[in-house]
Image (cartoon, rainbow, N blue to C red; front, side, top):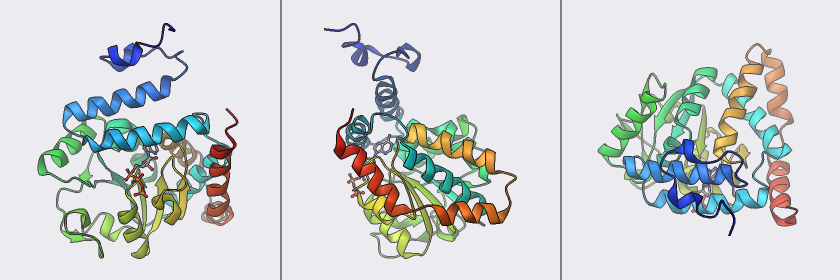
Length: 259
Ligand code: ATP
C-alpha cells in the first residue's frame, strides 16, 4: 500500500490534498463535488457524472490535449465575438469552478446563469450565493421567465434576458437533451465534456474535451490574450476550428490507451 492510498477518504479541506499526489486533480475534483453535495449546491446525481468524467480524464492522461487547447481558443474567440454570451452553471460546475467561471464571465463580458437539471428554489439560491462568494456580481437563472422549446417543463426553464436571448452559450457538463434543444434554437454552443461520444459535445459547435477544472482557466487565458485582437482575427480563429477533427482527436487519444 502506498502512502497515498488512504488520502481520499481522510481529506477534510482541499489544502490537505498533497499537490505531488499522482492523482492530485482527480482527488481535488472529487473533494469539491463532495463538498458541493454537503453544501446543498450539488445533487447526488452529480457524483455519478463526476465518476464518468474521471474515467475519461484518466484515459486522456489528465492533461489538456492539443485539440482541446485549440477548442478552448475557438471558444474564447466565439465568446469575445458574441453580442449576448451566457455561461451556464449547474451543480457540478458551481462546486468545481465557481471563481474560475466568474473570472471568465468578467474576461468576456458574459452573464452567468444557474441552470439545473434537478431544479429547486433552495439549490438555485445556494448556487447563486456560492457564485457571489466567489466573485460573481450578477447571477441570472432565478427569474426563469422563458422556456426552451421541446423540453419538459422543469428542464426548459431559463431567463428571458439570459440563456433564452443568448447568441453564444457555454454549457459545461450539460445533459444531452438540453444541449440538443439549445442547438435547435440556433445558438452557438460551446460544450465542455470529457466524453467525446456523449450527445452534448456531439451537437456542440465547439466541443471542448477536457476537464472543466483545466478548461475554464485556459479559455480565460486565451480570452485575455485575444482581448485586443481584431474582429477579423477572431473570425479566422473561429473559421479555422474543425469540430469533427477535435472530436476525432479526443476519441483517438482515449482509445489508443497510450498512458
Ligand atoms: P449525455 O450527454 O449523452 O446525456 P451522460 O448521461 O453521460 O451523457 P450527464 O450525466 O448528463 O451525461 O453529464 C455528465 C457528463 O459530464 C459526462 O459525459 C462526463 O464525462 C462529463 N463530466 C463529468 N465531470 C467532468 C469534468 N470535471 N469535466 C468535464 N466533463 C465532465
